Structures are given as C-alpha cells and as structure tokens.
Image 1 (cartoon, helix red, strand yellow):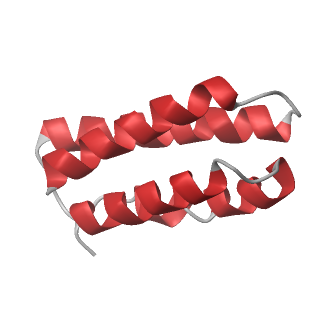
Image 2: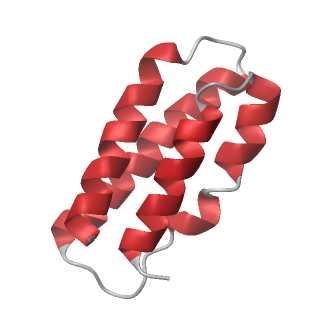
Length: 89
C-alpha cells in the first residue's frame, strides 16, 4: 500500500475516532500502528510528515489512556496526517 493510501486510511480513522469515547477510540488508534511503516525509501519530507502524524496520534492515545482530555490534540493529528497525505499523493 502506497503512503498516500496509508495516509488516507489514517485520516479516515482519525476523523471517525475523534467523536468516540476513549474505550472505542483507543482500539481504533491502536489499529493504525501497522500503517506507520514506510513503503520502502521515501523522500525525507514524506518521512518527516509521516512521523509527525504518528507522533501526534500517539499523543492522543496517551491522553486517552490516562483519562485526560484529548480535545486539543485531535486537530494537530488531523493536520499532520493531511500534510502527509498531500506530500505522498
């Protein structure tokens, strides 16, 4: 699966998980881990965008796991994923 496809799937999952309670959103976010793997060698800009998206997603997961509000983190992750998608597309 190409990076653009991975980014699209991640974006779709993020927007779906954003409005779910933590017990539902956490497994949705955990399922994205496999999509963090690059498809071969990519330009540095795409690798950085992919890494930024997944770091932002990890921050959401940590907050949800700790029972903290993640409201302020969702848009950062969505923006980072959209950037990854546009660069990979």
